[in-house]
Image (tube, rainbow, N blue to C red; front, side, top):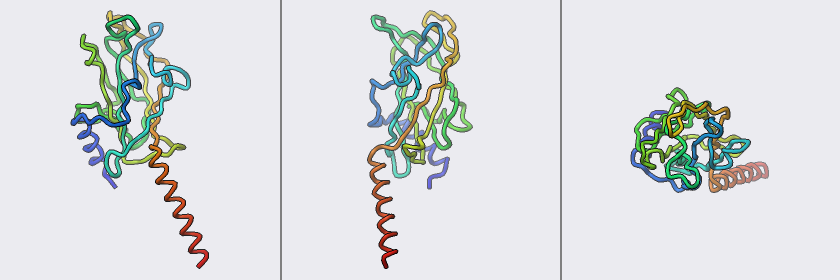
Length: 203
């Protein structure tokens, strides 16, 4: 079983190397903006509307380590060339034990129990300055009934013109579940155990 230190080192290595995980889909980036002067997730609709929950599938990065690449960006309204926001901070509200998040290209996880739990994105005039990726990873494989969870709020935001914005009133939830192949393997294992029990009883 991996130690906490080794898990964090492996996650950081993936982030530093900028390894793109197969699960990442640019269309599913979390787009941050504001509605009526209040910070909010604008897209995708699963986070922008009740129950404000988006599901991600963990894939196996290495034996005993599971993760997914989550993209983040600032929302740019149709017809505009610049985003709504100049600055915003993502604040960790809750994270499942053993789940960690590290910004791609950085060495230290920022989300996780006992970690800072605050991540600030700032627009500098270059659209790529706010297009970021976080690798969420864990040595524990969740189940569909008991997913790993990361919950966050948006705080300390400024509109593009520098106007301060109200903190989000919503707590957003990312749920991390096993990929279907893992479920099949788990199911096969359970079937095998049942078969072994039956054979033993018949002896």
